[in-house]
Length: 303
Image (spheres, rainbow, N blue to C red):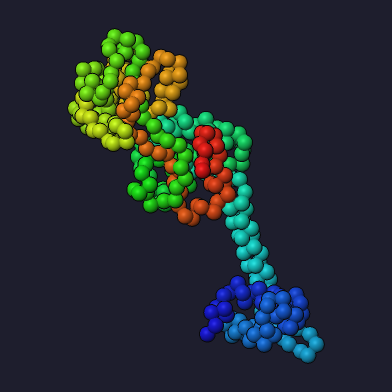
């Protein structure tokens, strides 16, 4: 049996078109099929429904009572289908609707929030729902449109756009560094007070520094250790020692000279921030525009 006949929407559209044109031949031409196929398919519809829909004469087509009821229902089905298609088209091609986003807590609060507020001001028909969390979400399971992550792409099963570098920096308050001789090599860190990040109360943290592109692992134990970067930042600003922090967190203080970079020839290994989304989100005009907006707002030049 022809699969085309099993398409209920096609059969409903065939009935409506025949009635509107009052002609099998004209309806067939409009639908791009032959008159014989139109007649055969309508007979199949009548057989499926178990009733006659059209009385045919040599000059006129007449709907039966069952045909009249089916015709009205068919028109409604076609209208609902067209509204669905239009709605999906508008969703793909218009800047409205809901946008669910997740991002790492600190980067989200400092870097992404100003961008989100400007985006919302420019697009008041967009509803933004944002979760700043360091937990790794499953985009499909959690129904997330865009996830921003500092990650390696070979670990991610999603489509990705580069957003910005997640650059790390060794730094200390100027007041702290004035008390000690300059550092010239990573081994000099052992003679300094360090502020490190701890997890599960572990004593040591490993800093990975780059020496002319080669990775140099340095095992460090801080006199102060915290589980979050904000506390490390606060301790560093108060002169308690050297810390490894995201450059975006200390950028203003570096520019003001309040904080200075330590061992600039041995910068810590960083990563990259990406916008991740699933294949089914790729055609959304809202998501595409939003990601481009974030890229432009953060000043990233994409080659």
